[in-house]
Image: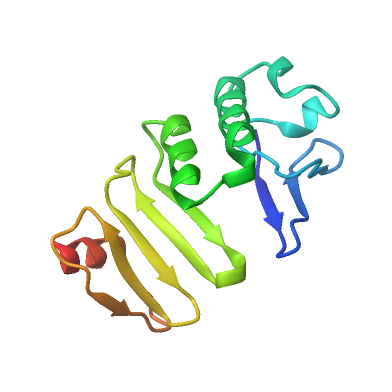
Length: 154
């Protein structure tokens, strides 16, 4: 599996772009959502979600089913639940985006008990749960490291 990324806009349109051998592969959203794991979506175009196979297929199927089951009332906690159910031991960071609100929710490694909320509009980062305090950090162009976040909130 080479480079792949998901791109979505505020209108609900989304595509997954995957590196191909002779050409790049584009998988468009078909319905209310699209799922990307470390799995080659482009190899299974027009196939049912539970008929895919290969490395990563189990995580793709699990994510798809979990999202589909709750799609009409899907929120931040549901998104993190899917990420928790499908993460790997090597997962470094899990992020949920709310593009209309200009917000992102982040947890590191597979520690889903500690989450931060990043507000692009307010230029702040603050903890949601799992910490002793809930202070906000104002970030600048230099950014904030993970080490700084943990140190600030512990």
